[in-house]
Amino acid sequence: MSWGDPVIPEEEVISKSLDWTLMRRLLRYLKPYRVAVLFSIVLLFLLSGLGIVGPFITKLAIDRAIAVETITDAERMRILTRFSLLYLLVLVLEFGIRYAQTYITQLVGQKVMFDLRTEIFRHLQKMSLHFFHKNPVGRLMTRVTGDVEVLNELFTSGVVQIFGDLFLLIGIVTAMLLLNAKLALVVFTVLPVIFFASMLFRAKVRDSYRNVRTRLARLNSHLQESITGMNVIQLFGAEKRSFDQFDDANALHRDAHLQSVHYYAVFFPVVELIGAIATALIVWYGGGAVVQDALTFGALAAFIQYTASFFRPIRDLSEKYNVLQSAMASSERIFHLLDTKPGIPVAADAREPGPLSRAITFENVWFAYNDEEWVLKGIDLTVRQGESVALVGATGSGKSTLVTLLGRFYDVQKGAIRLDGTDIRELALGNLRRRIGTVLQDVFLFSGTIDYNIRLGDSAITEERMLEAAQVANADAFIGRLENGYAEPVRERGAGLSTGEKQLLAFSRALAFDPEIFILDEATSNIDSETESLIQDALERILIGRTSLVIAHRLSTIQHVDRIIVLHHGEIREEGTHEELMREGGLYKKLYDLEYDGKRWE
Ligand SMILES: Nc1ncnc2c1ncn2[C@@H]1O[C@H](COP(=O)(O)OP(=O)(O)OP(=O)(O)O)[C@@H](O)[C@H]1O
Ligand SMILES: [Mg+2]
Image (cartoon, rainbow, N blue to C red; front, side, top):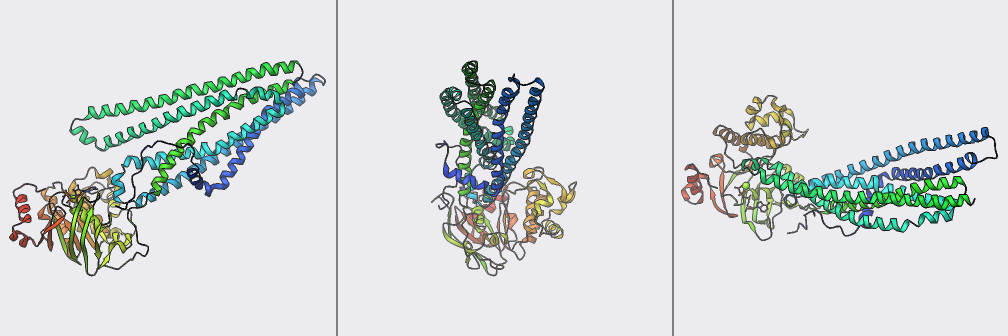
């Protein structure tokens, strides 16, 4: 099959920490906001500068005022006040710039996330049914929310802040070297230790982080499945087992987290400790230099401050490295999703023909979901304009499959489906689907009102048309009984409505869009006889003059169709009117007798 590999990887092993191809593609998302990003980097540069100025002012204050004995006390106080005010000014500036910088980076991050989510959602809307069957909902949800969030972290605290840390480090090193090269070298003696500790930390955290992610994914998918299937779990008393499974997944996830917490808890104090040792070295070595008059007291004070702020960017860089790493993994998954081609190829010169004038034809149609496991085997079927045809057959005979092919949710492997002689693969997909109104086997309702579920928010459908559709579909009576009528909220998946009511609602929806071609895939569940007669009555009206394909699970549903097709193991076995088929005494008659024996014939 030509769908390529539509399966999105779950949590694959990350081989590379920094992949430049990925990185370049990621940075493209910053392009629309490049002015803001540049501005933010300039602000970071200024911030690093200010961070270096502070200790230098301390040095000046000590060397020019506090430790000077050649000028009057009043003069010293005056100079000291001046430096203090200067320091204050630096702090205020730093505050202001930091605010602006934080705001701008977060702003850019949010905008990039917005763009990415939009792109992913738009892409998802184009994917074929095949794709959604292969990819669990939970995994796709994670792509749109979790992975995008990780990228946000990269943009806001990663990429940009790395510049900040680097500027600051370079600035501090330069300032130290300029102040006193020897003393600077003393501080740098601890660097190999830091370097080694960071490497170890990075490797450990990377592993445990990967663990956290896989275990979280497992926890989430278990949770999602349990919530969706809670009624089954409760009906079969499987709470204990489901709970134990959850408990296990939960514990594994907690332990993975604790593991990474452990590494952080070791690494951060280690860096602090090394910093303290460096400071002690400065006090010892620099103190000696001050005693020997080789260093001013102010310079020593500045050095101590520089040393203290020297280790923070080093520590942060190690942490950023992890952000970078998980961002690489997330972006790889997101890009894989975005690069998955929509399953249904659309012809470049797709046509938008007018209304159906002759017929829908299935010509020797062969179809398999998985290669060579044929679900439909050489179907030849013609439905003339205005004709209504019913499909019957045992469960799994391929009825639903046949009708989904008409809307091109899948493409046939052999043969063709034509509208007035034109292969549907040559038609514009939107045009094709707009012409078909489908009521699916399991009716899907969205959370919203009844009104929304009929019109699906399409403003082209007027209120009158909606009301008329509901009336023709016999849905108006039960809607009228609802407390808020058409404004009644529908809960997720239509909980609170009966199967029959949902079906009537689905009829209304299909009719509101006034399709040329009507497809009904009747729900298999039992419906009370009153609703059943409402459905039959509505159907009778819908089918008049409309080209239709009706899949029936109750033979009573199809009393009014023009022709009945009996499908068996993906092949057409019998064809004719009810009377003809009964006379033939074949499969149809068997199904009929079964149904009227009060049994289901699936
Ligand atoms: N998404 C899918 N992936 C793989 N196989 C599928 C898929 N959907 C259906 N099938 C298989 O295709 C065959 C035909 O299924 P189909 O849903 O068309 O049957 P049906 O006639 O509509 O049955 P029912 O009366 O129960 O609705 C079945 O054997 C089913 O297992
Ligand atoms: Mg079916």
